[in-house]
Every structure is written in structure tokens, then in C-alpha cells.
Length: 380
Image 1 (cartoon, one colour):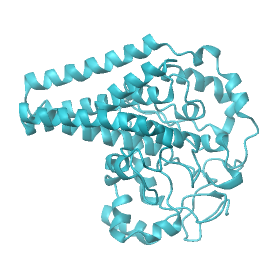
Image 2 (cartoon, one colour):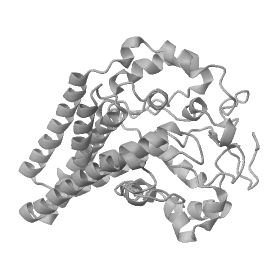
Image 3 (cartoon, helix red, strand yellow):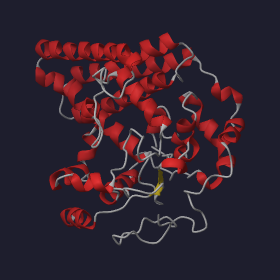
């Protein structure tokens, strides 16, 4: 595997862009226990009442926004409502995400009840997602076993027809991927988050998947009923468009936590992969005014290494861990009120990061020159 310079296709992967004497793929000189020891003990404490207060806050905002939209009902307000409500849907997802990790509370029952409530409300099958997301955390940075935004191998990439390649690597289409992923996963992977017999799940998890699929179905039935009660156009304005904004938020954030850093970061296979090295390839992001709204999900490195830490302690835990992490922690670029700078990172990565080598235990994204030129010519 090449460690610097250019790929065989002539596109440099910028491994030495930020710091020529630092190799991000080198095994770190510290252990995960040292990071854990640096984090204050109170950061591990889960306060269910505090967690529930965030749920109440977010649902209050959801219903207040909907009430305001119904009362005002003007086309001046609707676009503002869609952006705000879609963001609140995304905030609900993050709280359900904490339930899935068990960082919401120490009660398995409370985590399950709140996770189903939060995720079903936004048409996410809670247990199906929870189990696949656990797989993602347990295998982060592993080309073969990771679950979220996994790189295509060169062989798999070349097996895709041209239209599929352009769809996958042209903004904004990847920002609408999440519902399709829930139904059929990513290219090269089989299964569905709704099917209890999917190879995503162990036999003892099938009842959990059935439960979340039933909850999802009840929410879908409620939406169908509401479409008759208030009219499909009104439901589209109140729920459909915000749900689309939520999906865009989810794909935007989850992609950028594992892609798009200025310096290309490694992906691993075989003996070179470890839980720590994989976790260190994740990236923290600053989302400006949205940091608090979506529960500091941008503090992602420590979250990936220690997903049991509640979201309201992640900023403090990250500050405490940074001296141990050293250069393996990549300070996020400071955002203005709106994180417009991240759009450039997203577009650049999707346009350039197409596949990784079929072999090798440390690999970096490579660029398809023909697709890159095609995408650039259309952008011009």
C-alpha cells in the first residue's frame, strides 16, 4: 500500500497534506485505557431525568412549530418551518440514537420505550437500526465489516453501471440515501432493517426487530389516516417535507463524521484493524448554532470510542482526552452560525472519494478519473 504521493490513477490522496511527519495510519502510542482514564468519572454518569428533559424540549418544539405553521399557514413561513422542523426531527433521532447506545439511562426498559417513541415518530425502525448501528461502532474503519458509509472496493465499484456511479457520487443524491439504506442496505450488502430474518440480525434478535417493525408500521398507518383527515397536501407540508430535511441532515452528518477531512484518512482490513485505530479515523465537526440543537453529535471521536458516555458530557470528555490523543485528534474547523464550510468538504469528498483497493490492510480512497472529470464538467 502506498503511503504518500499519488495513487496509480494520478490523483493524490493527500496523506501528508496537514503534517508531513505524521502518518495517521501508524499505530497510536497509547492504549484505549489511557484515554478512558483521562476522562472525568462524572462524564460516565447517566441522568435519566436530564435525558428526559431533552425529549420534552424537543417534542415541545416539534408541536409548537407545527401549531405555528397551521395557524399562520403562509408561504412565507412554510420554508422556515420545513428547515426548523426537519432539524428538530434530526434532534429526535439523535436522542433515540442515545437510547440505542444505552447512554440515555441505565434502564434497558426506559431506553427501549423512549427509543421506540423517538424513532418511530420519524419512521426509523428502532431495533433494526440499533443493531446495525452497534455493528457500525464495533467495526468502525473496517472496510469489510463496517456498516455505515463503507467504501466500495474497486471491483465492486467497477461492477456498478455508469448511471449508478453518477447517482451515488453526485451531490445532492447521496443526501437522500438513508431510507433506501434502511430497506436494502448498501451496495455489496444484503438484508433489510425491517426483516427479522435478515443477515443483519442474530436469531435471538428477531423478536426485537419484529417489535420495531410493528411500531414503524403503526406510525405509517397513523400518517395514512392523517392524510385522509387533514388532506395529503397538508400532511406533506407538515410532515413529509420536514422528514426529507431530516434525512438530509442524517446523511450529511453521518457522512462527514467518516469522510471529507482535509487529509485523507485510512481504512483498515485484517490484522491492521483494531477498535482503537478504527475509532481514531472518525472526525469531529463544528455545526455552529446547531451543536446544542442536535445534542453535540459533532463530538464524534470520543462518542465512537465510548458510546456509553451521555451526549451532554461529550464536549468535556473530549477536552480531557485531547492531551492523550495528540495528533490523532483532528481539531474541527470553527464554524460560523451556519456550517456552510462543511458543504465544501462534503462536495469535495463525494466527488473524489470513489473506492479503495481490493486488497491491502491499510487503504485510502481513490478517484475514478473519468467520473471525476465528468462530474467537474457538469459542475462548470
